[in-house]
Length: 157
Image 1 (cartoon, rainbow, N blue to C red):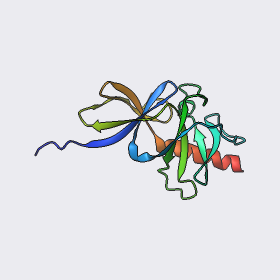
Image 2 (image 1 turned 90 degrees about the vertical axis):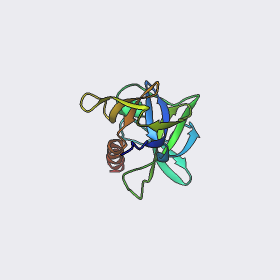
Image 3 (image 1 turned 45 degrees about the horizontal axis):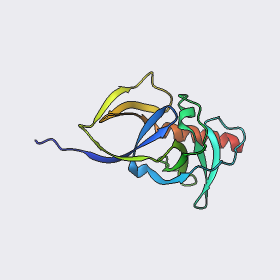
Image 4 (image 1 turned 180 degrees about the vertical axis):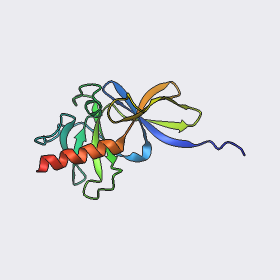
């Protein structure tokens, strides 16, 4: 049986001290950074909320969440709006702070190498990978969403 080449369109996203690799289909839009509205009683990785297309959506710093770097928005920062995977119809989107524009990439089996996975990785990281010459981390978006939902519920209480 012949090998079937799997091709996925992905994006490399620069955050403080890391580069994330995500499927392109998870991104709804890229926005310029604007200071978020604070949300009281939330972890430092939940930077606040932003208004987007009639939605009030939470803005997270993945670098702070994974405890790999302090990250604040500023000149040159962007915000990516992500489609939530958890199926919560009241919160179908959340936003993530980035440093610059995401870069479209083609992900194939031959171009992608797993460098590390499992125990010992930062919180919210599924694996460290190499895509061609680019090292990146694959974020655990399900874990991030679970923590985000819990933080939002605690803040509303």
